[in-house]
Amino acid sequence: MLNFRRLTGAALGVALTIATFPAQAQDFPDGPIEVINNSKPGGGSDIFLRFATENAGALLGTDFIHLSKTGGVATNALKYVASKEADGQTLFIVNAGTALTMMRGKGDLSREDIIPLVRGTIEAEYVVVQADRFADAAEFVEYAKSNPIKQAGTKVGGNAHVSALLMRNAIGMSKQTYVPFEKSGEIVINIINGNVDVALLNYDEFISQAGKVEAIAVLMPERTSNAPDVPTGHEVGIPVDVPNVRGIGVRAGTPDAVVEKLEAALLESMNSDTFLDYLKGSGQGTSSVIGRDAFGKQFDQMYKGYQSVAKDLLGG
Image 1 (cartoon, rainbow, N blue to C red):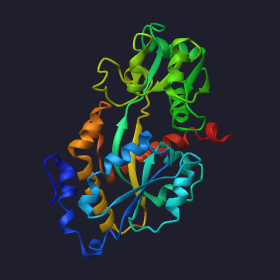
Image 2 (tube, one colour):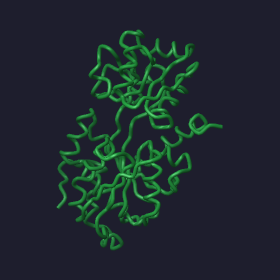
Image 3 (tube, helix red, strand yellow):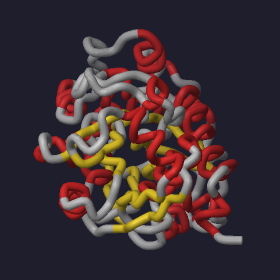
Image 4 (cartoon, helix red, strand yellow):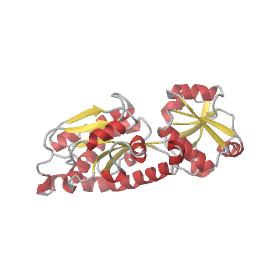
């Protein structure tokens, strides 16, 4: 029996349909459902997927089996998904890595081959600099327009690199050099020491060093509850949004009734106390959870933004 206590609006409307699906979906699921991650077990995406699906198995009357397919950002994950039938028995992570891999023409799946089914998290990225180096974000923007900037991030060609390029274009930086590091802790140390000028980090990655580093803007449409005094990029001359998004997808061609059944179960699962407590840990709330119509539109916007920096990423 479904628990609708935490559901409101569209999520409730979708969940209410679980018990009334057409005959096409009555035999779904047929055994366990696989959930494919593109990073290592125990990482952020793996943890998200496990929390997101925690209650969905009981709702659908089956088990969820979590598999990590690493390599080539999301290449191996998407290749594995492409080898499976479009029947709803295989779900997969939908994030920046998914978009980047498809944009590069790797992974055996294109944008038209997937349905971004539900979004579970939308974590803010903050523009972080050495504390007191700049009076405010406006001064940093003016500095970046006329001086070379060393911007720290993680691996070349990954999500952090794309976000850095999008920020570069939004500001109109004079010259940006991207400096990759293995871990966020290394990035913070190099900001403190003045070896790099700026980085995009989530709240947990920099807050322990507050006073030595500071966030001067958040690249989101609205200010965050974690740091309400930090202005949005749109307020200070960095008109771009680069949130860290995690969601779940299914192959296009999956029967509509099965897609609806999966979406309803996942939305119900992500409106549970357990998942909402997980969201609170990163300053997120119920608005992070959206269904396929809204998530599909956001994913298309992400994909379009990545295409705008494709030349920098792919060469040529």
